[in-house]
Image (tube, rainbow, N blue to C red; front, side, top):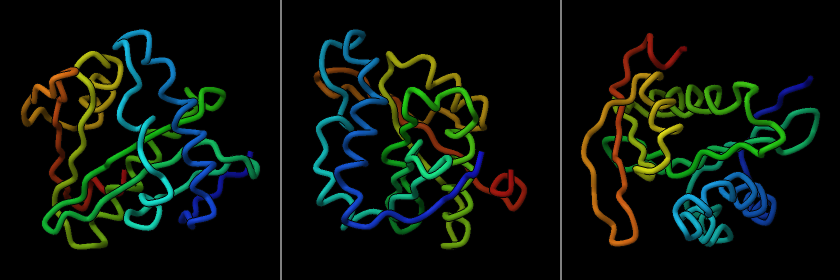
Length: 156
């Protein structure tokens, strides 16, 4: 299996939208609506944010969307196509996002997820992300988490 990591271009917006909708579809029955990433404007997001795409044998398998927030980097979206889940791609992309943050001189990476996505919460906790706060969004509770970066944590 050949793995390639590349930056997205505006021409990737439709593929990013499709992969994200596919990856998050499993959560719709749990929360009774489409999660925020399923409704995002990816034409605009690709122009405004960084998207790193992971291709497996030339097929888009996963992505991470990051936003430089000045003193930290926000992981806005981490999505793995269902047919590629369980292969370590999410872990690989989180480590990549941490490395990108360090190259930008940041010492902190943050993310958020839905409180009902317990599988995601456990995954992030295992990778060293700690709970910062919970926020009632009216349609659900967002769990904000972050990780302080050291030279060792970014190289994992």
